[in-house]
Amino acid sequence: MVSRPTFEDICTAHRRIQGAVHRTPVMTCATLDKMSGRRLFFKCEQFQRVGAFKFRGASNVVLGLSAEDASRGVCTHSSGNHAQALARAARSRGIPSWIVMPTNAPAVKRAAVEGYGATIVECEPTLEARETTAANVIDRTGALFVHPYDDDRIIAGQGTAAKELIEDVSELDAVMAPVGGGGLMSGTCITTRAMLPEALLLGAEPSGADDAAQSLSAGTLIPQTAPNTICDGLLTSLSERTFSILRDHLKTIVTVTDDEVRAARTLLLERAKLWVEPSSATVLAAMLKDTCPIPMGAHVGLILSGGNV
Amino acid sequence: MVSRPTFEDICTAHRRIQGAVHRTPVMTCATLDKMSGRRLFFKCEQFQRVGAFKFRGASNVVLGLSAEDASRGVCTHSSGNHAQALARAARSRGIPSWIVMPTNAPAVKRAAVEGYGATIVECEPTLEARETTAANVIDRTGALFVHPYDDDRIIAGQGTAAKELIEDVSELDAVMAPVGGGGLMSGTCITTRAMLPEALLLGAEPSGADDAAQSLSAGTLIPQTAPNTICDGLLTSLSERTFSILRDHLKTIVTVTDDEVRAARTLLLERAKLWVEPSSATVLAAMLKDTCPIPMGAHVGLILSGGNV
Image 1 (cartoon, helix red, strand yellow):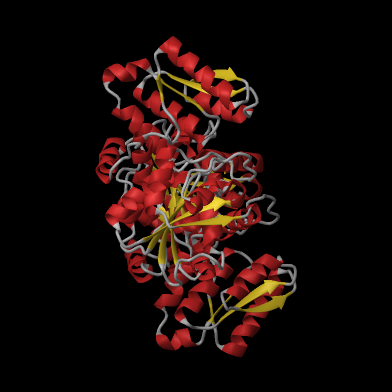
Image 2: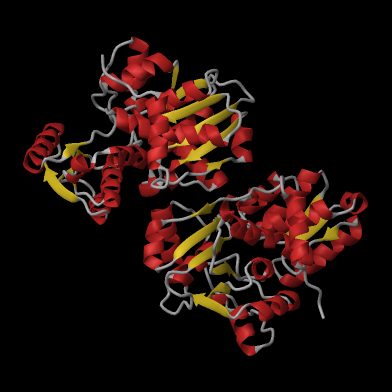
């Protein structure tokens, strides 16, 4: 059986990363409350450093390394928010980082990672090439590999977003987060169960990448094969680790279409002035569906995961 | 000599409107700090109710009315944020409001005001028609006219934004706000002088509507005749009241071009994930100019006025 972090690990992570990460604001919007029939509390991780919650987990890993381990540097393969987060966390500690990116990664993402002082190592745009290239970097440099979500330390770091949300809002009846690889949702589950044992826990997932909903429904891990959604932060599959956590805690995943995500994203901007990436808008899209099982009038905490478009 | 509000009036306004208005967050961004060479603290009034600081002043007027006066309702002529703010403040108190709007006002602005329960009264798109129509409404209904900035109660309400900013950030060396009719800037001046007597006070103004800079420079009120800027919240002229306050407190107004405003607005979105209206971006544009007189390394409070585009 794979390991999993405890709420104590999340509290330790929170003490470790305080000062390094922003305590992001919790925002409300009367119009969206009215439209959803509930009171919504948005935990705004788009205002986190590097523009996404990923900086929490990456900071927890990097700041938790022994001096000896840290001196070896860190490595990952990603062209998304995790790459920026790891590069920036490494720079803050003054250690090297190597980011394996496919040759077709957008120039803006390369520039962001380079701007944080990372060394980019190019590879062909296949998962196999990414993994082989990362293995080569690690062999050559001795750097430590940091997976974007299949890692107890990463999950513990991501769980600090829900911890702050629950600390800042006195009474929540339900908590919802987007589900991609399951790192954020896993941390959210562990935190919420410890702090609010009676609260409903829900995930939001694009219907074009609904491996988590399918896996929970089937009771077994079903990998994502051909994701098709604008939510580019939610394309990845659960791991055995995140699946086992979600299976224990999460009864419901609400799936939403790309059109519903677009509409929710526009509402967040027009009505709440909140600019988010599509992945983040899944949670509001889920709240606005007739099928959303959260009772009317409930107080709901929603994690907006990031703002990098 | 015209009257002006005191800092005590601003404190009274703050007690009165607490609970009705959001205490908006103060946000920071390491990249923008680096670019400007100072530490920037953004007071985010785009997250205020109705999406702009204007709700502070309107709430102070409406909540400060006696029961008898309130029952008569309120009236203004505006197609901008003040109209929405007054309509919503009136609805919150359960009193009627009449908003005089030109026939060519955008449908979205009409819809917003109507959504807050106001009665829209149409007029020809000239200042004379607006004033005549408003006078007729007042004659007919007995409603109280509420000017968008030439009113001590409005200025006192707007001054609460700077009060919260200074309360939330322990040490500020300078405070800057956009200048349109001068209501926000006047309130910001009175608050800052009382709470931080040594702090620099600056205004930001579009060069296409620089009547305040010209007036301060000439030492006499020079009305804005043909404004030409994308900053549609800053087209109006100072009044005698706001001019007299600014003349006493404000040494420097930094003027910025529309191109500088556009660039600053893009930076706020890309680097800080903050979506603001062009008028708000004037303050960052001013910070990024070589001619900005705020010393390098200073801690600067900047008021982002709104997010309605």
